[in-house]
Length: 167
Image (cartoon, rainbow, N blue to C red; front, side, top):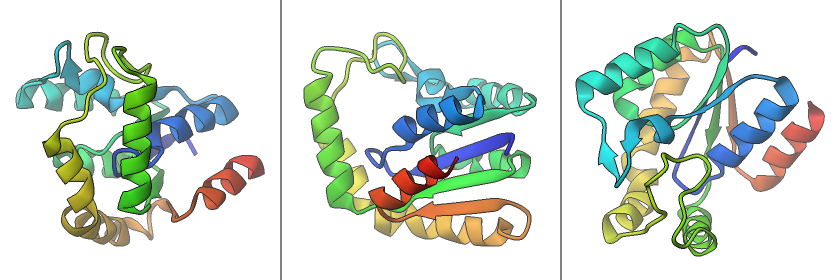
């Protein structure tokens, strides 16, 4: 395991897992949100974002934490291991609300400074519809690369804990 991709709905625990995995493997953790978003929640331009991803993929080892489906094919070509968090929308929504409360008025450690923690209707809707809109594409994509990559799908928090304990 040298090049790792961590995917899943917002609030599923990707960033927390990535940090814990990085501590156990000594792989550097790269939170894609911290590179995509500029202060004040301004998104990177598409060309700029593609260049950032291209530069990241040149590295010898990493844990890439984040979805960004427009670049998923490119990232999948370069990684050897994929972790996918396949959790319920209720758990993800709970965690996002909890995260918002705990980080009120602050920027999370896995975000760009100046991106104050927030929740809006669009974000809640995105989480609510993730299983219907995003999951099928991701599962199909992972199915296509399963012979060449190690794919680990977590469906429960217990599976995550057990995996980390096994390292």
